[in-house]
Length: 372
Image (cartoon, rainbow, N blue to C red; front, top):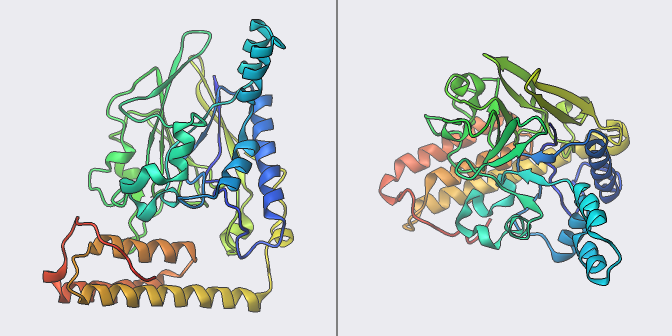
């Protein structure tokens, strides 16, 4: 049985500030290539780790474009053909067999404030409820069975504010396999590197001995890391199919997808497939050094303003969750590719303000940001 995995897609209506190309045409080309690779390899489903959408709420016209871009079978058209007698049962079955289910997790970009508190109002919730995307959890896994009777379970762990602060690394761990082979997809900052205490992250070494999953796929980080094997189990992040920021690592990497093949005889085989539709960096990015420096300066100013607003709120008498404020600063800094040497003193200043006013902090209570 085969599956095709692609990383954080970040579907959006606007063009990232660093891109010079017709971004919607680029997304069309990449989606078409990914679906073609899936069909040529006769995969059973397409898998993704969350952040399929770039924002929690998309406009209706954008959702329509996304549905057309990624749908492999027009079910409404088939229903009309059945009702009018244009297709018989065998023809209907064959056409439905061409459909490729989309299975995935929910990312931080798809949630308001990184929380599921208002999940029902998000666009990703709409896609799940309409059946466009399957969302299998640990409690309700999606089980596939091949012609030889081999079963493969697919489960996901969605992003949460504490996903990489949990000392037990619960989101990354499958305690009991749900099938012969178990694929677990996580939207968290799982990595093979050590970032110290500055940025919350989870090292593969921290959970690889505990999980029962045969294949753990991690999203969130767009650069990713190569497959790692430990005691017959695999860990990998193939990275994002799209490059959103004009930085050195994004300029150098080749966007790709991952073909997963599982058989009883050979176990799990992973094949990385470079996307031919991904053009050279110099063709799609604004390489003007001056303009790039201005963009960096603008983003640094955003973070400075954010810290200023956060510290003002901490000094106020309103109850506030300091963990979420800190995470907002980290998330925006990460998105803007801010150097750790710049971010660290900002977080230190924020922590000092919070520590100086502990009686104003009420962890876990909801609050509203009035101005950003």
